[in-house]
Structures are given as C-alpha cells and as structure tokens.
Length: 464
Image (cartoon, rainbow, N blue to C red; front, side, top):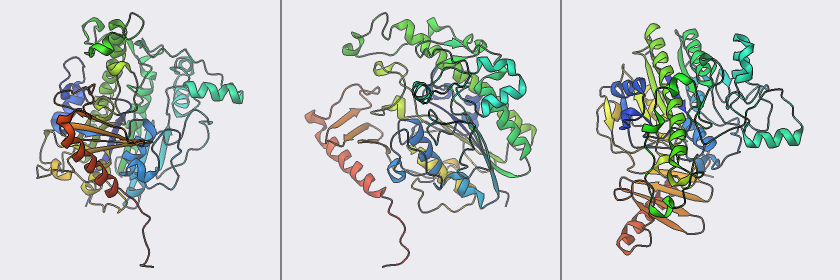
C-alpha cells in the first residue's frame, strides 16, 4: 500500500469568510476557490484556542489545549509532545515544516540556535517575517543579500523589550509597525516571507518526490502588519471594500482617528492583499504537485490557526472570547485518490479532528491520546454527524459553539449566550433573558459533559 503524501498549507490569522469559496465577493482567491471546488470545503470548522501557540499544538497533536496544559501564549511546547510527524515517522514518512511553527516563544531567544525537532526531519523555521536571524533571512542572504534590509516588517513589541533588557544589537533594520493600514512590501516581490515558504516547500516536495512525506507550509500571512507586494494591493480598490456593521453603542465610539471607515478599509485592503499573495503561491504549489506526478497521491489540507477581528467589536487581532470571526477558520481537504465527494459541508468539525482524519486516510492507527474524531466519512460521501459542537478552551474560560448558539462560561461563574441566527456577529448577550433560560441550562450541561469527556489521565499499566 502506497500511503498518501500530506501537504498542509497553514496560514496565520485567516478568518473563515476571507475566502471567495465561502461567499466573500470582495476577496480574490481563485486558486483556493478551485481547491475548495475540487475537495471538501468545511464551512463550520472551528479551532480550539483563540491565539497562535495553543491553537497550533492542539491542531498538530489532535488534543485539546487543557489536555496539553497549554491554554495561553508563552508556553514552550514540551519536546516529547506526540505530534503528527511523530505519528507518521514509524510508517516511513519524511516530515518537514517550512516557515511558521510557533511551538516556542520567539521574542526572547536566538533564532540561530538549533530548534527542537518535534518529530520533523526537516525544519526551516521562521515565525516572524525578517525580524530575526532565522531560516528566512538565511534564504535571502543566499539569494540576494541586498534584499535583507527590506525583510523585516517590524520587531514584535515583546522582542523589543527583550532586546532592550538584554542589550541585544542584531544589526537588522526594523521599520516601525503600523497595524492600522495597508503597506507595500519594500523589497522585490520574490523575497517576501510567503515567497520563501512557497519556494522551500516546493524544494522539499521535489527532493522527496519518491518518498511518503508530510510537509507543512507555514505562511505568516495574513497576520498583521498588513504588508503585501504592490501588485496584490493593486488587485483591490479600498474605496469599494465594505466596513463592519456596528450596533449603535459601538458605532458612537468611532471617530476619524479611531476605527474610521478609511482605517477599516485600509486594514481590510492589506489583509485581503496578503491572502491573495498566499493564494497565488497555492496555485504554484498545486502546479508543482502536478508537474511531479503527485497531484493524485497527495492529500492537500488548507487551514489557519485562528481568525482576525478585522475591526469587528472595535478590535484587531484575536483572543477572548473567541467569536466566530476568531474561532471559525477555513478548512479545505482535497484527496483525489481517496475522496469520493467534493463540495461544501456544514457539519461542525474541529481542528483536533484533522490529525485522526489524516491518520485514518493513511491507514495508520490513531493513538489513544488523540482526542479528535476522524471525519473521513465526509470525504467519502458517507454518513457523519460529528459531535454537533465545537469547544474552545483558554485560561480561565471555555466556550461551546453549536449550530445556533455560542455559550461562554468563565472561571468565576459568569455566563454569556449568543443567538447566532439573530446575532451572527455576537454582539448581544442574551444569557439573562428569560426566553433563553432552557438554552443556557442545556448548553451549560453540554459544556460540562465535553469537559468530562476530554479528561486526559495518564495511561495505567495494571489495575494496581
């Protein structure tokens, strides 16, 4: 049996509706739309944590954040954590990660140091574009050192504090980060971080064309700051982009300098341009698979670690309390050799479900500690109902998302409920309304049952 190759295209901070295939008429994503049409597009896919590090290790281990004991940022992933590459290694897979991985805090370390492998045989880690001396900067230096001065998009704030405290002088020119407007990449188009990820992913695939392989293409885009080559910015007229619809109590807090229409359109302009750049490289990756004769034999997964407020709730970024704009992200699975059905499914699935699905597709047993549920039946047109909910866990709070509601419970006992059919943007908390008392009671019990099911005791070796 020839096991399928696995290509995971993983963006950072891409919300579910930032994709033409998911009904967005403003954004231009022709290659991803084609991928969605040829595969299965999961339009109710949710991540298990609203920030990068916990979400990423949850996704790649198939375990909930609470089981991993990683529910907030800044927790280094233990080096013995069982990840998808470790599950594949025993079956002859060569595993690589190009670009962002973010299993370690990146602001307080030397990126020239050898990175823990986490089961990967090939690692080219670059968690931030050009901020550190890492694989991305080494790639530019080898190709055209004159482009190094344009690589950094700005030093992350926590890194600046660490550099000042430790008196680090890295010699890298870091521009000021401007998170509230679109900007053009200052260097040549072929030297962006996305170009690095795509080129090195294609090199990995070509090198291992005769092997069984897993490769994760870890794109930084469309994470802020919103910087893209001018040609992708030129694809959009910012004046024609929509702005969020705010309830009156938030709309009155806006001003010419605080979430103005101009600011919101500029942010969306840069965000969309970054996604269109990734989309362009997705087309190149798919053509490379075709050129190498691997298109039919490769499972392609496209997803993201979490979404982006993009001005909704008068916020940018991600985090508490994990509304759909943050928790609901794209998931496309294309498997020509094994899937029997294409199209969009509204079945609720979770990021933890991806690992067991891939293992089952590859004919590999799913380890008992994996908590996700394989949705392989959906790829093959068979009956599959799933859990019927999605769980998000973070330090001090948890939320459960069903078809019609999102219920939030905090450690101090506070509750919130959002009726998604009436309030899809989740602005109005109806937990105290008498009409929703039974719903709150039901979802409170459902959340408690989910927490109990997700307990992860150490395995016993004998009765006593």
